[in-house]
Length: 175
Picture 1 (cartoon, one colour):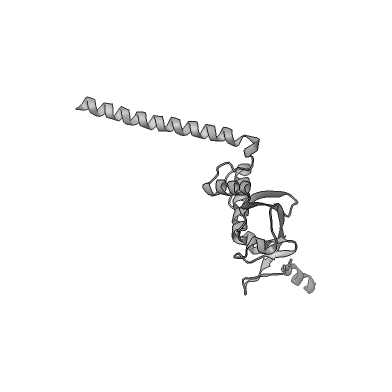
Picture 2 (spheres, helix red, strand yellow):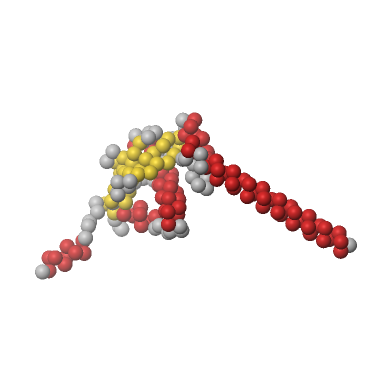
């Protein structure tokens, strides 16, 4: 009995080692595939939805959107043609988070703060309503949206014109 249980234990370890070897081979194959310049737009650790969106882009049912940041740099990603402003914000969040993690390791960004102080715009139209379709603003394939400073007012939870340095203006009137 003891001999048979030790054989079963070794067999279990063999299955475990075999699955680890298969997993390691799969990871090395995936990393080699992702090094290919043709697949340069595939994220480092793609999700199923990322792959679906990229396939849809090739089939014409998704669009590539570029975002111009305040520092002048830009990045682009794919979203479905039926995407809303909320989908666009989620794609921006995912792209920026992935880029920051690849550069500096794990880094937490307060997206609540970002969206409270900035918004996206397209041809001077502010994309404020999360439920609006991107196509309603005229956003099509290869369009470019911009980050612009914009502050949400506390009372209405809507964006209003940014009031810069309000505290310091009050101090200068006293002197």
